[in-house]
Image 1 (tube, rainbow, N blue to C red):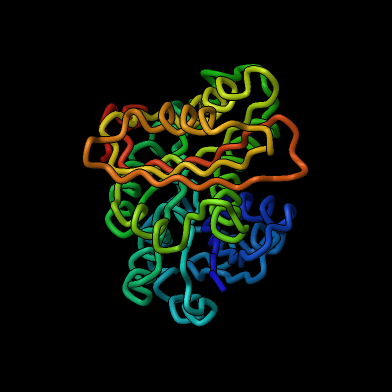
Image 2 (cartoon, rainbow, N blue to C red; image 1 turned 120 degrees about the vertical axis):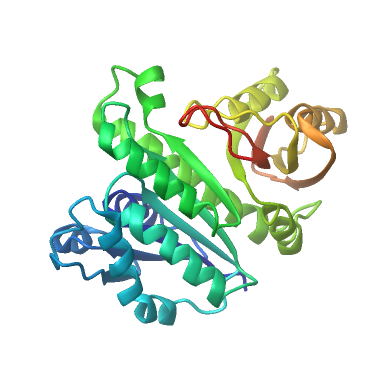
Length: 315
């Protein structure tokens, strides 16, 4: 059976896996790592470990070096929980001490210990007004991307750009949903039987290509279902990426019985038209007998580019 672990590091990571735990996603084990006793005890996870800093139980004081050191101290405890993983998500907010310092150290120890596992980072970038945190976050992301196979990058500033009047609770729920959607998409593609299957080897091969990844979900129903499915998949405002020249993609469709072959091909063509000429594209299709006049999409694109952070590109 496929094994997926999601590790939340620091307060932001703990919040995301707590929301994920409430969704009761099958085939996923959650681990919470935090340096704040109160935050850790309030989190929901299958396993929880307190990272010991100089201020044990009271955080890392915004110092990544303390978060990194605490991760190394807790190394054996963390590794003892994880058994024969296929995929490991490391989820954190960048810019503070624990997430920024501990996440790269965790990624390195996991890649050393489990060379056959695919390690995916999923991190948030601070708001522009958090000036000192921006520099810290940049440095942390530079370290993290060296030790993960691929990285999902979520810019908090897009919340302000697209939803200036949204409540803060709803705003951060949207951020959490990006990561949760990535995990649930991975699980559904691999676990549920399909007419055209995407297997574990296919997905591992794609995600091993490295760089930034976009994992998006979309859907469409009714007369304009093809157009709606395409638009809703590629228009997520918190993942502001360009995938012209991307290294590869997997498109997985869950369709109702009335969906025609031409519609399936049109969705796949439109969602992969930016892939490099030599890029690998794989499609999976599942027919849902309970669905009515609908197309649901899970899209994995590896090697996308983003100018939303620091004015730079990661590829």
